[in-house]
Image (tube, rainbow, N blue to C red; front, side, top):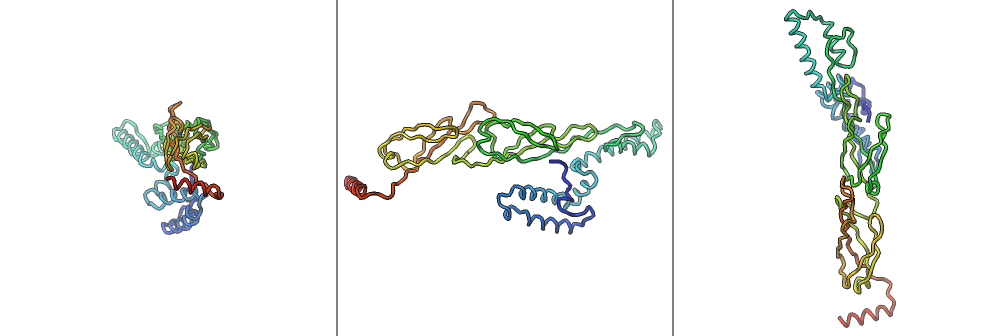
Length: 296
């Protein structure tokens, strides 16, 4: 999540032509494309970096800003505006005969503005906010069923964050002040974390609700009875009504997933019954079923 050298990502020198950049991008994009690297998180991350580098370097205007301002290239217009304003202030003072500034004074200002120290102490330092960082955090569905703490490494520093129960796949949260360092004591950028929730359970999640299919044997479906079924955090006993049809759905209120930042509140669990037809019938069973068939 530290500063990324786009030229290094594409494997080209800073003197590379547009054709060189395009050629390097196409070669790497084919190598790391998700279709050729299924379920490979390293290749997926590399592919994203390659695309990000290409978007900047293949655009002449953005490339010029990047070459001049590096990791702060997105703030190039702010820098230029601040320089112009300061130039106008100096020129106004010079023309008015009150300051008597020289070209060396301008150099002091620009050095001061971009992080250097002014030898004369002239020129006001302009503060700029640091660059925002983005990261992806992959968790299992069971990990976000309860609120827990997680440690991230950002710029060689450990950040301990609290992940609230109920975080959804694709959701983004902001950690204030943990992005790039500000310029001239400006505020740091923020860290944006996008969650990738992997579900290896038998439950299907739909926001705060859970869905699951439960097998029901033919005889219990016909005659009724009780059945122990799994919820996400334990088992419950259900009463099965006689003559339950295949595909019947029942709702268990409050047995779904936790609601994000709403402590003690849960969605519902929806159970769909799938009637299991018996196989390898004995002769006696076949005879009884035929008799039942005649009765119907």
